[in-house]
Length: 342
Ligand SMILES: [Zn+2]
Image (tube, rainbow, N blue to C red; front, side):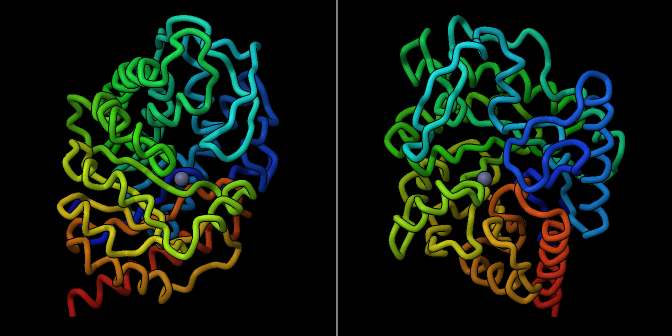
């Protein structure tokens, strides 16, 4: 990146009301067949245009091609039975009906590569593509085959690496793995979670990012956050190992979170996507609020390694609010850029 403080999003943006139910997370598609395929592409171009108009530097597809950040990827794999559902506790927080791993998992065809190629053809800006991380994938499934979280995570890491290499070949500049599970299962993250993530990123020349947030602004997550006390020190558990990892960029939740900013010192040397937009609030940040968060982070991240971003995805927000937040992000970054050059 040549721009100082390049802005980006964690990934998802709201979908148009003709594609999926607005303000609803994981809403089912309103179209099917060819109409759905065309609708996703139209929505991708709108999401890209929204980012361009706001002045976002590193753009994505707004996850218009995905219903759910994990299951849409898993749907394309062999070995997972979507008819056979089981109820599991997601990230120790809420129960969900999930598909069952019923046999050897494999990827017989690319999942998002065509979508990424389509995005690449629409813009000259750097593009980022999001994939689920291995540990978050296993936490969103019932495993009736491997009977080992670690074993299944290594299998998914191998599959993610196949997909990531093809995304890179399709022209993706940054491949981001979403690993909110790192904020919950510290021992597993340190024992094998970070290692499986590195496996997923192995051999890539594209930059790699890991997004570790406190989740979308849904009630289960908000209740959990309220139970975490006055200081959120979850990042402290995994940061030393992430600092030593091969992953280039770490994406964090900083706006309105109770994460002590000085924890970022533990990943000094890495690029950091600093979340300066709260996705759990309908109040649009002012550019000054965004700038204040970025300035606090600058004590612990070198300016050439700071990427202003959103805390998490904005899929459940109203479109006009999400757009306002994108604009505030870009305007806030511009304030800090001007200060750094003055
Ligand atoms: Zn997130």
